[in-house]
Length: 236
Length: 270
Image (cartoon, rainbow over all chains, first blue to last red; front, top):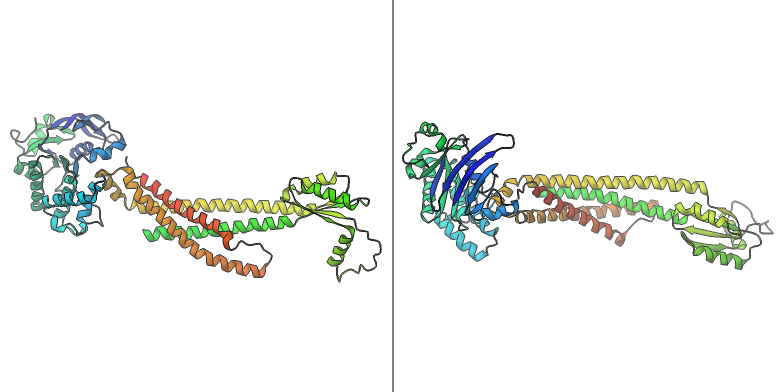
């Protein structure tokens, strides 16, 4: 489903964020991308939905080399996956319904179908009763759930989350993780970038560990520093 | 942001409209004065009325010549009596010394010297007068003034475009996050762009309309005052202003549209 083939990324000022990482995520998996702050987790995720273009290497998503698609095709790539951000990225001044519906409006879905699909997505994240509320009036957890509903409303089978609990307390963060788990159980591939070891240990999912821009194969000592056992959670 | 954008467009289109109205009336006054300038071609003593009329018809068909009027010797004396009434006593004149002449008006004051030179070469013509010095000064003065005015109008137009563009750019900048989010959920560039362009067009049209609402009574008051002080000035009024008003609406709307288009494009990545 997602394959990193010797992918590297450097910023225009020459700073190397990722150095030739290799990783594969199969369809239907729930995978954590873990590592300390600044290790390159977000950079790796941003390249999946082409917010950033790999400096070298290839990223294949659902059979498509995303590094080579022309800029005008990028919106069509993003419609095939859902992204959840640390800062929610909701449209202010609009309701929960309007925010979730926007992902369907951009693809020209008719009004009746929008109402049906948005209703279903809001039920999944337990926000059906807040559909008409302005997003500014929601709590952090509710805003993130709105963001998740928007990410899944178009029926995409790939969900990417970049530090989705970064602005949330532990209890609310765990609720969000449980929603991701539920989405994964329904068949979607879920990729979550986090530096929160609690989630990794509690959910016992596969981990791709990135340290200083490289994957775990080269930095076993980094994983040990974070207290991860290398028998159950580390990626091969 | 709506208030800032619309207010900016209103003020600038109002000022631009004022400038354009001045320029338009300046050109009308120039044309009116130019149309009063005449060349007098004094005919030789032996030229008959028939010859004079033939010459008149010939001149009327030439380029740059707008009208030709034949003034007989008797008509010339009557005109002189009328012009000098109460100042000079002409009752003692027995034999009319004045020659007949052709009064020629041209379409363009710059062509007067060339036309006068051509008329001078005709066999029926004794002498040609066209107040050369005055006309040269008139042409030079109005040419300079016209260039100056045109320069100011162009400058005003550029300032209007730049300031409105910048104001709209600030408005779009404040919605930069919104544009980013739209793109992240899969909106194409045109899907993001069109609402902003329509919004810009609306701001531009609304601002220009408000400018015209303020400009109309101001101009009307000014024209009324000027008509009392200088009644002969051919100032533009009524339906003569419609084309300019339409242009101002078009300028306001276009600048709003283009400002939004250019501003949004800065934040579109694809």
